Every structure is written in structure tokens, then in C-alpha cells.
Amino acid sequence: MASLVGRPGPDFTLPSTSGQDVRLSSYRGQANVLLAFFPLAFTSTCTAELCAFTEDFGRFANADTVVLPISVDSVPTLKEFKAKERISVELLSDFKRSVARAWGVLDEERFFARRSYFLVDRTGTVRWAHVEENNGQRRQDDELLEKIRSL
Image (cartoon, rainbow, N blue to C red; front, side, top):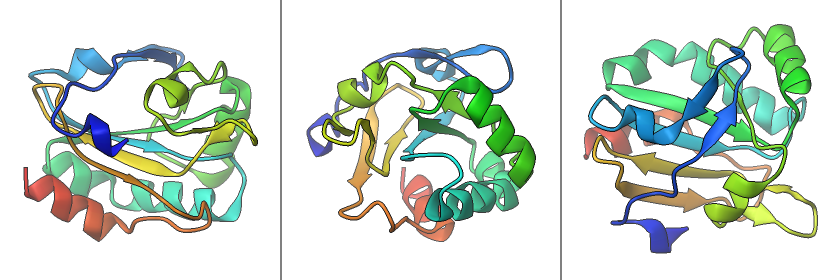
């Protein structure tokens, strides 16, 4: 988590709701990336968080940042969640939990990711990390965008 700050983040390739695999390293030299691990689709805090990402999609794009929300839900579950809530960002499925584990945010007892954020700059270096103490809490987009502006 915080130990990743200042170092390259672990690369990964995950299936997404677009039907295409997403590889973190494909954004190097192209854009900043905000990884947003969320526990489970269809839960209240996760729904509010992802709807906020949708509302602020343009603000993140203007900040030259791609938002990659990741959960342990299956792609079909994430597609249903995305459609029901009209979420515009593509959601990534870490069904095997390997990415959450590599980034140090897998809750081994509950077997889902803790709500957490990692800001990865264009070089692939992790510049900021935050893990919520309580999965019912989340960072507001204004705070996340302020972190991005400070890069």
C-alpha cells in the first residue's frame, strides 16, 4: 500500500465490462491512472462512489487521468451493475483476487478488496495511496482530483 508509493506499481491485465482486457502498463506515457479498488457491486457506498466517478468523468479526463475501478465481482455481475446504475467508466474484474493481493489490499478473511485508491503517474510510478479504515467510507472526487493536480 503506502510502501508502493515512489515505486512502479505491479502491472496487471484484467477483463473489463467493455469486453476488452485492460493492462495497466498500456497507459504508461499516455495518462495518469487512478486505481479505485471497491469491495462489491450493488452495495450502497460502492454505488455512490461509482456514480460519482460517472458524474465527474469529464473532470478526470480533463486532468488527463483514467479511472480504473476494480472489484472481485465477475464480469457479468459488473456489467449488470454498470447497466443498472448507468455507470460510464469501465469496471475491471479481479475475480481471482490476484491484483488486490499484489497491491496489498485484499481482505483475506472476507475475500474482497478493501476500498482503496492508488494514483499512478504517466511513468507507472505510484504517487499516492490511500486505504480506507472502514469500507463504508470513501474519498470524495474533489479530494482525488486535488491529488491528481499535485502530480
